Image: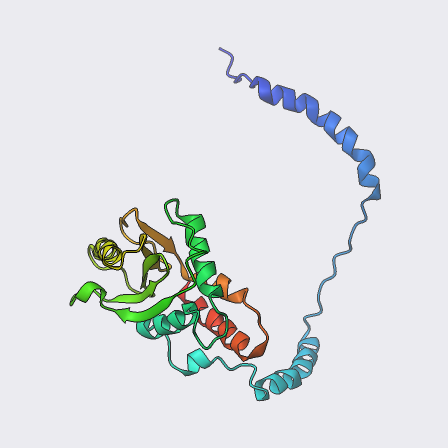
Amino acid sequence: MNSLQKIPDDDIMLSRRLPVLLDTLRPLMKNVVEVPVTVPDLSPDRVTALICEIAPLHKQAWEAGLAINIWDVAGLGYNEGRNSAVLAWLLDPRGTHGWGSRVLRDLLHLAHMRHADWPNLEDSLNNISVTSECWPMGSVTDRVDIAIDGDDFVLFIEIKIRAQEGEEQLVRYVKAAEAKRQVTNKRWGLVLYLSSAAPVDPPDEVALINWQDVGDILIHTPQDGFNGAITQQFAQHIRKFY
């Protein structure tokens, strides 16, 4: 019995074509310049010299306050309520940050691109009201982290940092958003879930984003000025969430 396995036809064709391909490429390789590999000098004397060069620059930056992150100093930490309050401020077009509706618009656009049933709300941002820690429709059990009322929509944003959503929590929020939509005669009742961990069996109506998405939005705001500095600092602060 012949113990040799039959070679597939595709492998035979490849073995025949490979020499032809190499012959075709060989002339092109003549113009390739080999880059010499340089091994960095990591001797103790060189490392000591580098430290001596860097130390004054580090001291200068430190004394200029470039290492300050006001959100860390303020003790936001992983506290959902405190971080929600800062995010609500950034999402509020009337916030003193001076970005207008830019952050909110970018967040809603991302949700629209990610979620098939999410409407395009760019034309519904003329009259915006943002509230943090809202008890929807008089509920005594459910507290929404951020509630946003727009021209034609109601939006609840649920935020999680180190915790998981409660049992049927998002289902209740979807129902509450729909109830408020009907009462306020708006067109859309929406729920957005912000967490680095995906929720367990979320309703189809809920759009999902994570903290890295928020960080990417904030990083692309202008960096000059005081508002630019503190916005970038918040983007840096929330990196620990993902």
